[in-house]
Amino acid sequence: MMTTATQPARLDAQDEFVSEFTGTESRAEPAALFWAASVIAAVLAAWGVALYLGTLLSEWQTPRPRPAYHERLAGLPAGPSLELAGAARGRDIFVQVCAACHGPAGLGLQGLGKSLVHSDFVADSADAALVEFITRGREASDPTNTTKVAMPPKGGNPSLEESDLAAVVMYLRGLQDPRRLPTLPPMASIAKPPSADEKAAALEVAGGDAELAGYIASGTKLFNSTCIACHGPGGVGIQGNGKMLAKNDFIKSQTDDQLLAFVKHGRDPSDPKNTTGIAMPPKGGNPALSDDDLLDVISYLRTLQGVPLKKAESPK
Ligand code: HEC
Ligand code: HEC
Image (cartoon, rainbow, N blue to C red):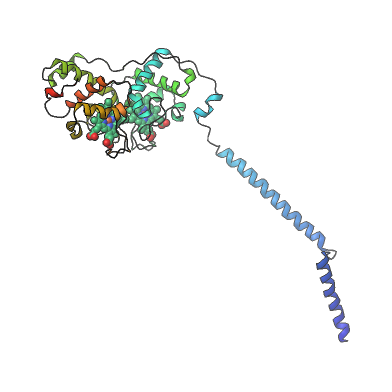
């Protein structure tokens, strides 16, 4: 009785052991396994397709950023050639005003102005919109400002007229696509000769010294075309661009030759004497200025110090 009761149990166990060991299953199990595998495969495939569709969808919704204009340029046909006189005037203004912050080739200067060659803002804006932008500038506090340095109205040069700014915009098109630039004539100074009023004012500060008055009048013009961008009209300084040069102890402490050397060299933010973290570019960023031009500017700076001019301070 005891043996007959245990016998089937032992055989069952043996059966199970054999089937487990050989991997053979009882008749019903292969079908179940096949279905389970099929369901898993189907779920995985559906998941894969869903992921793929999801990527397609999100790419469609948020397209990858278009390559920048200058990267697409090689594949684009060149625009029409720019008109010679306008492009030349634009180049003269650009080099003598805008280059102080945007560099002579428009590639930007670290800590001052951005590259305008690589600017999609420039590429995507119509001419009139750019003229308007340059007229207004972009304050450091403007939410669209990316550098926390101000782009001053008219690049800091209030004497620029709308036609001048249109010429600069034309030149910007050429900087972005040099294929459109005609061969330009040599640079011409944008500083106009002093007016009769300016000459009279200079003669007064020069205490009647006609020669000195000539230097001051010319220096005023040059200051107002180059240095004004960062130092403001009358050298009052511009927050975030350049220091006040009127009643300035540094200027008072330097001889004309020392000041000439300083202005030619500039003062980089890496210079331990730099107090603003902003660059004073060599020659105020205008490479066209000669030593004589700079000495004229210095004679003008002397008139802003609130002290009577001494004959010894007369330049040259
Ligand atoms: C005193 C320095 C200074 C001068 C001079 C200056 N700029 Fe700028 N400019 C800047 C700065 C700084 C910016 C960038 C502002 C920002 O961070 O958004 C800028 C931005 C610009 C932009 C917009 C670029 C962009 O991608 O957003 C244009 C266009 C421009 N300047 C044109 C000019 C022109 C043309 C002149 C000459 C008439 C000029 N600038 C003179 C400092 C200057
Ligand atoms: C692109 C802007 C810019 C232009 C253009 C520029 N400067 Fe400057 N300049 C500066 C800055 C910024 C400083 C202050 C640097 C520092 O932190 O020490 C400075 C400093 C000076 C100083 C020394 C003042 C002091 O108290 O230490 C003199 C002098 C000066 N500039 C003269 C000129 C003259 C002259 C021109 C035109 C030929 C000119 N600058 C054009 C930005 C400019």
